[in-house]
Image (cartoon, rainbow, N blue to C red; front, side):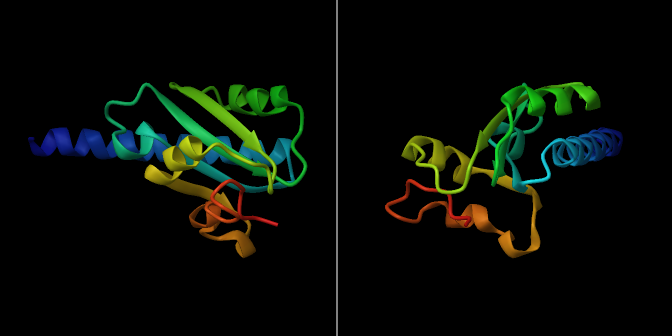
Length: 131
């Protein structure tokens, strides 16, 4: 890899980080009950090969799903965004939990919930660890 390639890669990473920040800020505008926004999947472990960005939104009082799609549309990212919205305490399939914990990046968490994605494996590994 040349220095120029590395610089271009860093610029792409910075643009994606700015875009993800804008997305979670819009999500928070549309749903003030969000306690955590987590990027997970291939966009974390292999961003250069990912086709989309997977985002897990944990909200104390989830809104209509279209609200979250509208928030992302307002940002108009140059990549597809898949959103999963859950409420704390909701049972989740173990495969989903493993997929999130396999590679994740906490984009936003209310201060008392920092690193709560690590706590997904409570009560037999089937509930979100935020109350």
